[in-house]
Length: 237
Ligand code: C5P
Image (cartoon, rainbow, N blue to C red; front, top):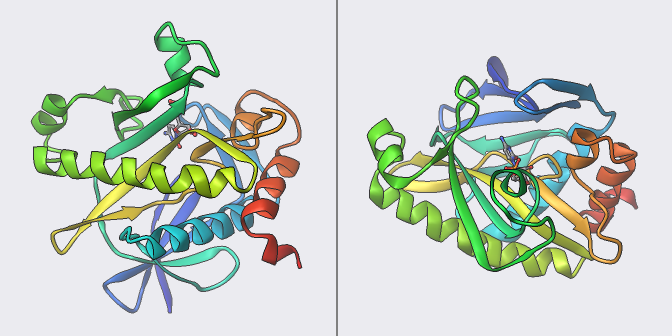
């Protein structure tokens, strides 16, 4: 049963349950970008992102990735395993886009020969600065063994996601993952959705993700709905 609200993030609210080992993640319709500077709302955003995340977590779980997903309690409420969140945003890049093209001489659309993995410090106060292993260890956010495990897991998830999405006509330039600790294990947490991935239509190259909102690239509802139609067609039947 849903108990008290524990935390409200930018796109999800977390609630306690009767079971100390589980939490409820409620996906909301709020949209934010640029560390909360740009705000908006989109009807059904929580629904689409929850359903997309569920489907992707199930696919990854079926391929041996340990995820926090337990079950759906409603269209927008996901029962998840309680974990201690590691304060690192693990970003995997296959094609240059977004911040990397601003910080380095990399042209948008350049396909990387091998995935580019970046660790950012998950901190709104500090604007999510990039980490290296020494800084992460000095900050105490993870051990070297954990960093190595995060790298391995993120690359494996990328190997699974790229062909899964390609089959649905979606390119995956980059995405962000968050992990947590539980009983000595590292578990994939948070969400994998239009808010946390760049999805480009394979035919047209058009954005079908939060960039539509960030950079006013068109109709965000249509973009998220199209991704949901391709990943979770059953919810439209
Ligand atoms: O902004 P940037 O280009 O570094 O983002 C890389 C990827 O990570 C994008 O898919 C973006 O949606 C995701 N991301 C995220 N949350 C953040 C930062 C980036 O989901 N705080």
